[in-house]
Amino acid sequence: MDLHSAMTVKQLVFMIALCSIGSGCRIGRNFIRTTIVEPIQFASNLDDKLEQHRFRRLARASFESARAVARADTDDYHHEPFSADERCGFIDGYADYLEAGGTGQPPPLPPRKYWKAAYQTSHGQRAVEDWFRGYEYGASMAEASGFRQLVTVPLSDAIAWNTEPYFHHKQPEEKQDAEPVDDDLTEVVEVHHSADTESPVLARLPPDIYEPEQSRF
Image (cartoon, rainbow, N blue to C red; front, side):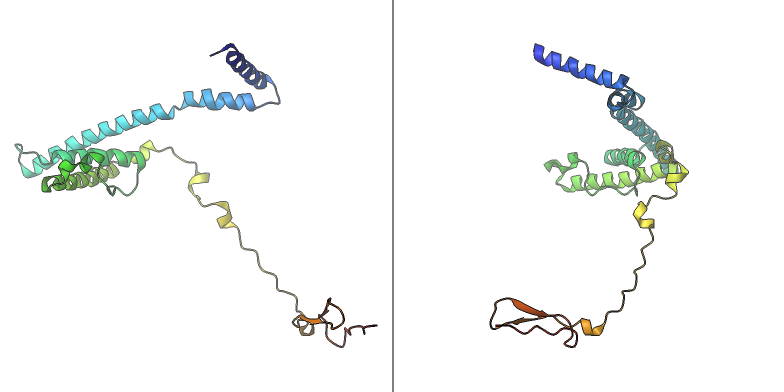
């Protein structure tokens, strides 16, 4: 950074500080609030990473519970009740539902790793089906857990009861009846061209009210 750029940055910082001190200037205060205070209070990028890590940890714990229940139901502790792809789908579905909610249905496409040529076989197709089945099962378990209601920010009653835009509640204005118009004054405008002049003569009124003036020439 050259000397001129350094002076420009210093002048900008000085102007922002000066505006924040002034009683009538809010630019500096708004700048400090949006760039320093609010990111300290809630760092969205960091919070998103911590949230995703927590959701996947809950998903893995829920999968282990479902795995134990499935083994107990079949009384088979020597074979895995779920495939590796079902486990991946379960964790993805569970974590996605906690993060975004929704209907719990799997997305139209599986993850990109299933797009490879190695999965273009009968075994690969079964792996994709296992992932979809695991995703749906994991999302249903997340919905039944009730954790989704705990990770969303509550709304006040003033907002929660009504989410429609304001103009949807405006009553339509009643149309006023048009005043009656005399039928004699609603005749079609006819344009008559005079033989002597090029300017047209408009006949807008009934003959008994308007009589065209005789040409003097």
